Image 1 (cartoon, rainbow over the protein chains, first blue to last red):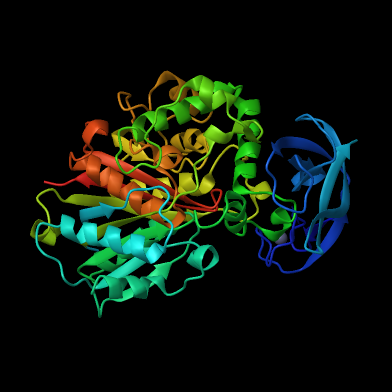
Image 2 (cartoon, chains in turn orange, yellow; image 1 turned 135 degrees about the vertical axis):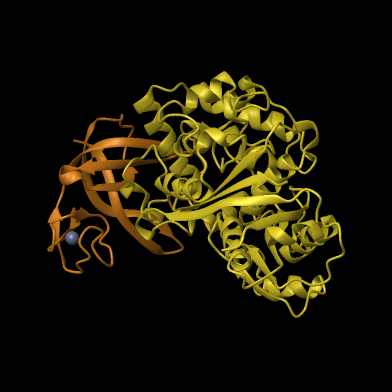
Length: 105
Length: 384
Ligand SMILES: [Zn+2]
């Protein structure tokens, strides 16, 4: 999966911002990330429509410090290594939302 | 800049009213005008904090509608939208109007009608404030609170019970507030056994869905005795904004917008956190009260949970927090909250808080927009 990398200062962000938070550049390329560490998670027992219930959501930090919020495919503990995939994570009235889903590495 | 005073306040009862927010705002505004010692039939401006009247009840133009209901034409009026911080934002703008000399009398209001939709629909309307890449995952405000609670427990080795103590304390205070939605005490066991919502947080860790409105009247401090015998001076007011994307926050157990806005307000008022006698904070979830009491400087980072367990924030404690019952028990009609917080601190400083009265000469209100996306801090002091 890819995150944004500022061509001005090399800062990594997900998602890309209108301008870079650090240097103000608007010039980004992207970088592949795959493995990271689970920082925290929650389990939503009354999730919104279009997702599995209960819904596991966590925040993962990848190499370079860039983070992403995504769904957990199965129970994972804080501090565990995870692998990220990019997939359809929510479907509401025919509209599909894509995003990260994490599995144990 | 001129010194500004809060000279009157009015609130509706918080709870399930239905109808339109225009009616609740009119009621709260009318009570605030009645609260002034001299008859007020005109104001320069009326600012209305409200998040989603369009989404909840299909209404726009609510500020002008309230002017008309209260026969305050031709006062200027406008809605101020900053999600759950709309009331605080309206207060900050009302203050700046009076402080600058542009206005002499401003009615600051906030209100929301939410119970006309289901809890699920309300949660989704609120979730529209999140960044699209996070919204796509099915996240909600309770979900962010669950993420923060687990990160906080993990980092500081805080027990689950600490958060339940916040709920028990705020229900105790709410039982002493006739305007609160929940006027019923709860036990620690009941909080800990309530249904799981956003693991590790349960139903009793969260504020309810609420209808309600609040209003305060602002004027130059030097003119305050025309309206009250107990003016309350605005010592400081400031706002700050953090990253929109929550996973990009520099610390998942902190709220930078609260910390920065508080630093600005303290600097403006020439005060420190140790001088604050009473505070209303934005406990949309119990963990947020704990984290905010740290970011406001009442307790060190990682120690707010101990203060909650030891009773330091109770009515009898060294630093009473959420004497109104907070969002947890008083209720959280989004746009009303920031104004209702100022009204509660004003009531405490004027000695009008009844069964929940504490001894206080200085107070603080902390209104948070979104999940710490922005914050507005107000410092108030009992006048001469
Ligand atoms: Zn850059």
